[in-house]
Amino acid sequence: MRVNQENEGKIIRRILAGEKELFHELIRPYERRVYLTLLSILRDEIEAEDGAQEAIISAYRNLASFRGEAKFSTWLTTIAINEGRKRLRKTKGKAEVSIDEQQESQEGDYTPAALTDWREIPLEALERKELREEIKKAIGELPEIYREVFMLRDIEELNGEETAAALGVGAGVVKVRLHRARMMLQKRLVPYLKTTVPARRGFFGGAQ
Amino acid sequence: MKLNCKHVWEHISEYIDKTLDAGLLADIELHLEHCEICSAILDSTRNILILTADERTFELPVGYSDRLHERLAKELARAGADTN
Image 1 (cartoon, rainbow over the protein chains, first blue to last red):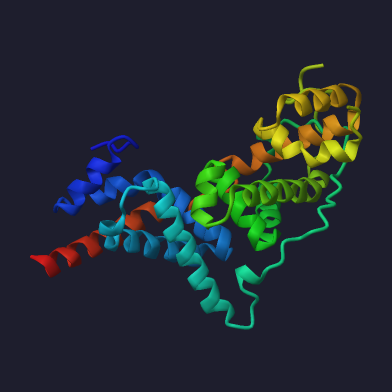
Image 2: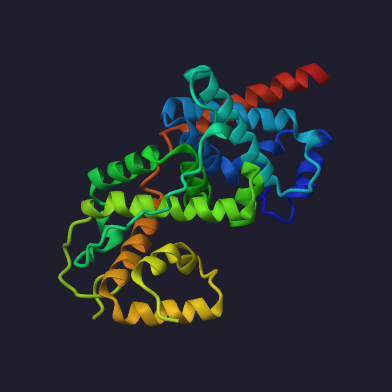
């Protein structure tokens, strides 16, 4: 059975009524998101995979408590975030500053990197493995509060409201953190993007 | 209103997300028409977002889905044994 957002509620009721095999189909569209959510918090592929499995099993066990006020995807993402944070606390111990204690950076003065001659075609650029690695590294190096928001909004493509709900913060906070995350990445990554297309302007390099 | 570059940078994210109000949007577009630096910053930020969102940047571990469903199947079987 194909699952889409409209019939998710129906599927969930059927699972709870005993057709538990349907849970496989229910979570299939979100497997990638759950993994990436864990990866964004844990920054370790093996830990992230293990955490993703745990989060999804936890979602199954707690499915009866899903009331449908939030979207299923947001509910599942919240479980994934909690699983990630739990693991992070375990691996880092109590010495680590907790997420709540992390200070929101107030300076807000992220001067972007200006590189007027960069017009590389983005998707061709990705063929370069070292660039992909550099992007992952740059995201991994973002302070946690920015990395979480960036991953949810720009990689997993939740909207602002869903991101706020999943993280338990306000929509304004999401907006500010997302902006800062993007500007930090812009500054950090622009030097790695070499000019290969001599065109003067244009998003995909070709247009004048 | 005449904007300086720094002011434009503060709104690049909202510009990309198209969440600016009409007045500020017009001011920023006017600025972008004349400012090579801000245009380049806007383009590069957008391009970086295209790159980060590309599925090749964050690939799932090989066999991730299979392992996940295998583990889930065990859990479902176990849960079934509990209730039946």
